Length: 255
Ligand code: PGA
Image (tube, rainbow, N blue to C red; front, side):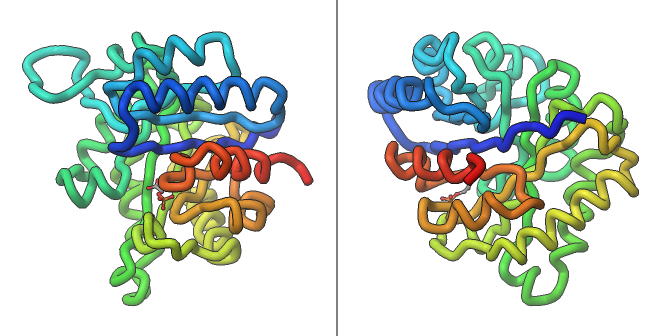
């Protein structure tokens, strides 16, 4: 098995106007033209996907949708399909981010439909899981993650899952400035890996990447990304700043 490259994703959430997103994409294309050994993905808001997709065409930078609806088209006001995302250049999509779960009522059943749809379409699904602070304090972290994985990934078979990544994002670490320690993350990633292989029957040969997300910044990224169990990072706030995001990308490279 060839070890997949580390994966660093910038989730821009509901930030940046199209002109700003385009400027940032141009700068990243330029800076990353020399960088090898890491896969870099950006997830701008929907309104910027098309122009950003045009700018990054032919470069090493990849594009992700932050969300999508599982039907391919139809009367679903306010939604976009994976066909639409692919049409503008996305080959990744985030699924089940904690903000989608907590603010927009997304549940594991909907997440499962999206995961199946992404795999069917050959789009890399980045499925987000993670516990709240209350759940961690109550000692329920592993149960929560197991439930999110078993429901969110229900019905998938292990052999065709190269187009799947998992992002462990403890809710208490997202946007708070308090990151989980590499040791805390490693423990959870080991649990996730074991669950994927032993309970869901995923093939180890496929090399499903498990990312960490939650207050990743240039100060903590090296320590996190050099941990063997951590295959990449899902970066929110720090991905909005060009130099910070580049510093995080650099820390995914071998020392
Ligand atoms: P953060 O967000 O890096 O701002 O904590 C991470 C995320 O929500 O994916």
